Image (cartoon, rainbow, N blue to C red):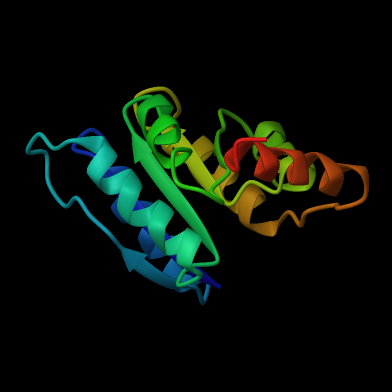
Length: 147
């Protein structure tokens, strides 16, 4: 799977850990930064991942900041992106299964590393169920078009 991954200064250590595990699992990972604790603006990194998901150069995206809130808000401004802030495995599963979320957002200051890994794994392994949920995702697309 092709994944785009980014974080802000609050989460670079967690991002690097997740990246290693994703690569070890056979995934292709496009690391969009950042790589240190120097203060950066999270919307810049959310945009990089969201654009890759939007243009198809990544199948899914993962964004990490202190809480995950800012990244999810910024990523959702890109058409076609359905970024979901997840705090546990259940929300990650439902984000994929029912909402066809294509960008996972997590908060490095909110959840521990083991939970972050479990959330990431569940998000990547859960397929979209389609059916009635497809109709709802289409309504989200219509909202993006101003309908």
